[in-house]
Image 1 (cartoon, rainbow, N blue to C red):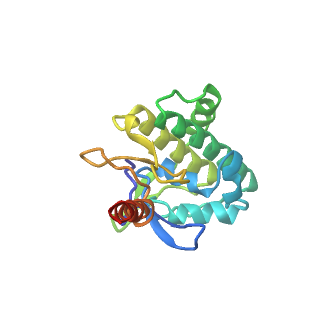
Image 2 (cartoon, rainbow, N blue to C red):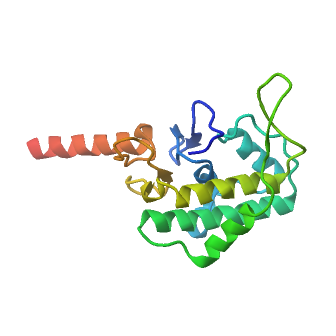
Length: 202
């Protein structure tokens, strides 16, 4: 979805069991969600200081990574935007319209100046000026606006895995993606299905 996708796309997350797996939510804005969230998701909070938001940008699909100047206020704004995106994305996944307050939060972030792509002297992509955290969040919010109003808005989904809250956009051609990751929830589903069949056979 994002024009700034690096390869391979996706984040490396660590499950509560300690096992790492790759998760590609399919859009920059959805990559922000695993950093924490509203309500019970707050237990996973990782955006506590400016360095945390910089580290998230480095792990995101933004390529090249912008050299950011981030303030504590930017981090607080990132948490507010992320929480609004969580609620908006899960509403869409459930076939419901996002709440007006969450849309207002996304729109307010999107209205600010975003990261500006530029040509570097060697002809590669760079970022113009001296970007700050607000420009980063504007870029994320604009990505959300494109996703939530674009052709894949109806493909924003929650993982079908048991006790998994991860949200992704299914950009596959058949549109049948069910899992956050085949390495994690997809594989766990296969194992449970196999055990169930063996139990029935036994």
